[in-house]
Image (cartoon, rainbow, N blue to C red; front, side, top):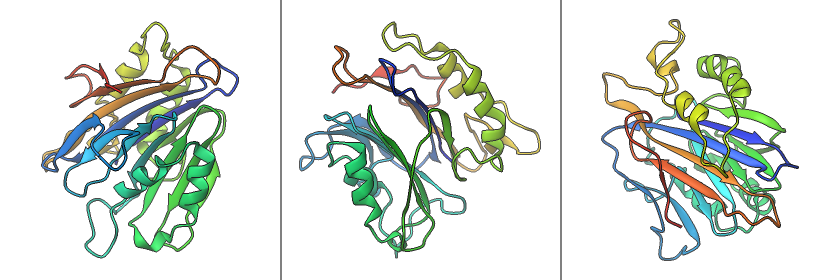
Length: 248
């Protein structure tokens, strides 16, 4: 169960701020975000070496795409396409609306269940694949939204119950000064509801080889401003390795 947190402020100089923890089997090989695809030179994204796709990335137009598994769908299926392909497909487009429209035309039966976010500095969408033909597309509201393996902001998710209120009240990151302290602290937390067990934590560690393996922080500036997008990445469990700027 990965986690994605998105703050939308359409009229702000930084209208979109994202934080993501990737939870995966430790043995599954990956590479940190970079320009890994010669046929997609505008894409900077993490590389899943097993299937060739990505879990999160950004293109040179300022579009961000991230994908998470839904419940009971961890790992590949030989009869399905890799969900990581959807991130690369989204990042072929120049804005989030165009990407969401293109992905909504796909046959959702070709993929295991997924939650996906496609965002730019104007628009943001949640795409939901449940194994049916139709891929649902929903605009993201203003304010803080949280994705896990459940529906958006779903209180059935112990992680949403425990952490969404804390992100909503935490000091907002300031990309101009580089102050991400409050969100970095939340992403590193191993605290969880006892009834949920360790997998209800934001930063997961288990005894069967499944854990939080990396973390990302992204900020998108408003149109017409002088700032460039910010993309920071921790190549390991947050709190144990530092975040570093991704070379773009």
